[in-house]
Amino acid sequence: MKRISDVVFALMLGAVLLMPLLIVALAVRITSKGAVLYWSDRVGKENRLFKMPKFRSMRVDTPTVATHLLHDPDQWLTPIGSFLRKSSLDELPQLWCILNGDMSLVGPRPALFNQYDLIELRTHHGVHELLPGLTGWAQINGRDELPIPQKVALDVEYLQKQSFLFDLKIMCLTIVKVLRRDSVTH
Image (cartoon, rainbow, N blue to C red; front, side, top):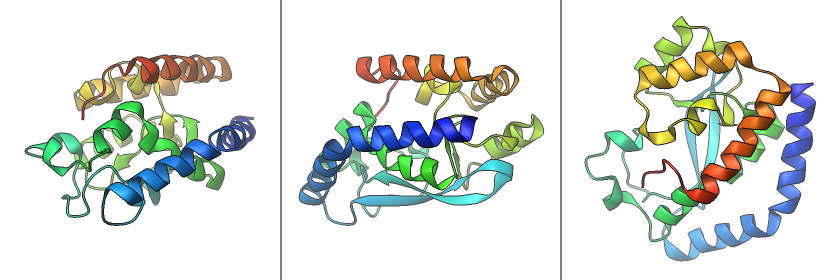
């Protein structure tokens, strides 16, 4: 049931957002050097790696680490990078991963391949059995500001409570958070 609803919602969102996707792609292309999409190695279900696209918001020479580990993240942003991140428009290409089956609309956000502490803690608590999501319970409850143990505790809570109605609640709260730009850094 969840896979079917993921595909249906992703197709509907893709159709509705086609023009904004094209506009963002053009804006990225015009304002900075490099590819429009940045493909990063992410950890998926059962800790398998997959390639996840985002609209490129950072310069092409940015180190491959989580943003919070960069000394001065702002220095690495492209001219429209801050806007893309704060508006979450950089995440829209991940609809492809949902259609492809590597991600779900709702689940724990996929870890970078080198976030070993997050991966280990999620594996210890069984969270690695879930498909990662475009949004998730931890995203609603703090997003970029959460320390890893708290993020994993929220992922575990999602694992225990997951249902269609809970996913719907998370998607609605995500829309509110994005529109308010709550808990978004850089």
